Amino acid sequence: MIRLENLTKTFYLYGQRKTVADNLNATFPSRTAVALLGRNGAGKTTLLKMIAGTVEPSAGRILSTGTISWPVGFAGSFHPELTGAQNTRFVARIYGVDTNALIAFVEEFAELGKHFHLPFRTYSSGMRSRLAFGVSMGIPFETYLIDEVTSVGDASFKAKSSAYLTARLEHSAAIMVSHSMGMVRRICSAAAVLENGQLTYYEDLDEAIAHHERNMNVHGEPIPDDD
Image 1 (cartoon, rainbow, N blue to C red):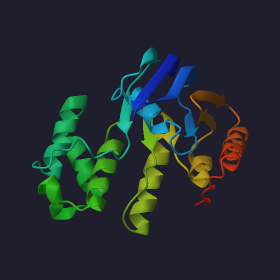
Image 2 (tube, rainbow, N blue to C red):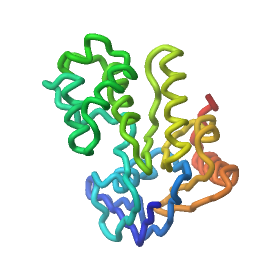
Image 3 (tube, one colour):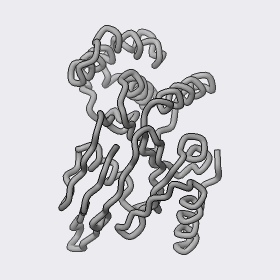
Image 4 (cartoon, one colour):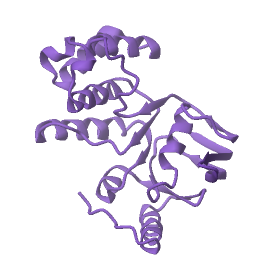
C-alpha cells in the first residue's frame, strides 16, 4: 500500500512556477496494478520519482508498506566501468538479495552473452535496457514502478519480458505510466488521472481512460494507438 498525504511538488523554471502535485491525497492499494495517466508534462514521472524516493516533495509525505522498486528498466545508476555482472552484484548487495542467484538470473534473462562480463560503457542502448530490465525483474518487490517501459530485442525476448512482468504482478502491486492504452488494459485493473496538479483515482479502469481521453481531446493532443 502507498498513501499520499497532502503531497505537493512545485518547480520554478525560468521564473515561472509550475505545480505538478497540489495537495494530493490518494491511496494505491496492495496487489493492484494502477495506471498513472496524464498528458505530456502533467507530472507523472515526477510523481513516480517521489514515490521511488529520488525526488523530494515540496510538502506533504508518502507512506508505504512493503518494498518499492526503482522505475523498472532504469539504467541510470549503473557504473560505466563495471561489467554487467559487477553492476548486478552491486545492486544485489544494496537490496540484500543473494548475489549469485541474481547474477545467474540476469545473465540468462538478459541474453547478453559475453557482453555480460564486459564494461557497461561498451553496451548499446538496447543492451543497457535488457540488463536493466533483467535486474528489475530479478528482485521481488511488493510494488513495482513502471515508467513507459518497452521491451527491447526480438519478438521472442519481448514476449518473455512481458510474460515475466505479468507473472511478477500476480503477487505484487504496480504503478505504471504508459501512453499505450493497450498495455494499460492488459496490465492494470485501476487507474489515476493526473491533470493540473490534481489526481483522480478510479477503481473502474474504463472510467479513468475515458477521463484521460477527454483531457487529451480538450487540449488537442493525439491519443496513441493501442498496441
